[in-house]
Image (cartoon, rainbow, N blue to C red; front, side, top):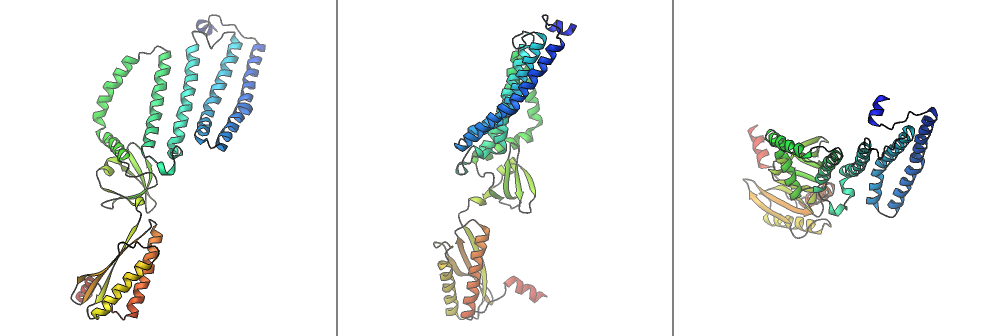
Length: 356
C-alpha cells in the first residue's frame, strides 16, 4: 500500500464491493470481446471477401487479435481505475505506460499483417504479376515496424535516442567487418531480386548442373530449393549470383535430340527415303514445332553413318515431351523396317566389344 501511495498519492484502499465490481467489469468486457467484437469482425471479414476485397479482409482478420488485446487492456485499466479511484488513463504516473501498451498493440496489428503476407506474399499480386522482391520488402518491413515501435514507445519515456543511435552506428560498423560473408549473401540476394531471374515455384538449374530443383523460398541470405530427389537445399545467394542460371520453367518448347547409327552398307537411295519419311512424320505430329526439324547424316564412321534427329515440342511439360518423343521413335522404327534399313551399333560400343 505504501508503494502504491508513493506512485499514486490519491490512491484509495478498495473495499470488497469495489473489488467485486472491478471483477464484473473485466468479466463483462471479456464477454463483449469474445461474443460481440470477435463475431462482428468475423462477419465483416466474410462480407469483404464476398465483395472480392481480399486485401481489406486479410488486414482486418490479422488485426483482430491486436484489437481484442487492446480492448481487454482498456477494460482492465478501466476496472483498476474504478477499483482505486484513480484515472489511470490520464494520471502522470501511469498514462505513458498505458499509452505504450496501446501503441504496442497497434504496431503488433501491422506486424501480424506483414507476417501473414510474408508467408503468402503472392496474395498481394496476381499470378501473372509475381515479384520476387516482395518477400524481401515484407521481411524488411517487419524489422522496420519493430524498430519504429521501439523508438515510438521510447519517446514517451524521454529516452535519449541520439546517444542510442550513435552507439548503434559504431557497433554496426564493427559488426559489418565480422559478417562480410553474410553481407555478401544478403547483397547477392538483392541482386537476385533486382534481376528477377526466377520466382517462387520456378524450376531452375545452374550451368554446372550441381543445383537443380524448384524454388521454395527466397530470403535475404539464401534461397531454398527442392531438388529432384525431394531434398531441401539452402543455397547462399552469392553462389547463385556468380553462376549462369537456367530458368527451366520459362521454356516454351523442349528440344528432343536422338542419334541413329545406320550401316554404311545400306543403299543410299533407301537411306535418303528413310530420312525424308522421318522428317515428314515429325512435321505431321500435332505437337511438334514446324520451323526447326533436322534429320540429316552428320557423321561418317568406318562402317556406319550417324543420323541426327532433332526437333522441338511446343510444351514445357516433361511428360508431354517424352510422349511425343516416344511417338517419333516408334515411327522411326516402323520406317526402318518398311525400307529394310539395317541399323549399326554405336561406334564406341562396337570398339569395347572388339577389345573384349
